[in-house]
Length: 186
Image (cartoon, rainbow, N blue to C red; front, side, top):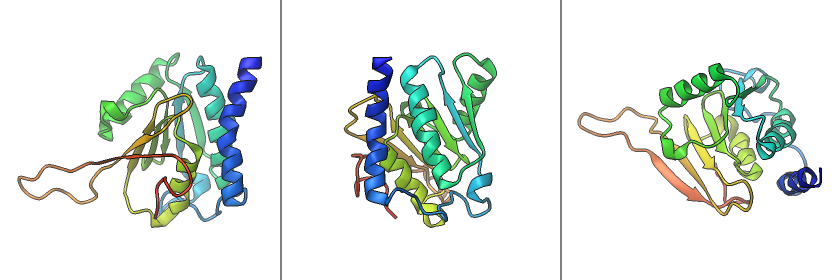
């Protein structure tokens, strides 16, 4: 029980940090798509119920942040014990073209346009959600696969325009450091 309590405190520190910088709430207009309201936007989380860290991060931290913004259509799937969920995750990552090096030990899909792999820092998540309809990308993948003490994360934005003849698609992969004004900006 002491280990769980210590882990919970380590995970809640970013939420406290978020409360200080955002006034405790996120704007109600933050929306990941133009066509769908936030409450209707599907959020699917693939994690392992057997992992104590992931369980706490997903159900006591990320889910609360998503609900605070207004997401109501949240589904959590255990891809370790549920073979159907595992196959679904593999097919989805292949369909969306997420490279193996950007796949984490848990995945959060917000309308297939914001994909969070691993334990993405809460300030980075809220920066992405704050962009709403003004976001400068069609889809983004952010990876931070460390349990604690992360110093950086990786992100990828596929090109929004089709490549010209004889031109290969360019994926932008960037490194960043979690924290205020160091995450995603509009």
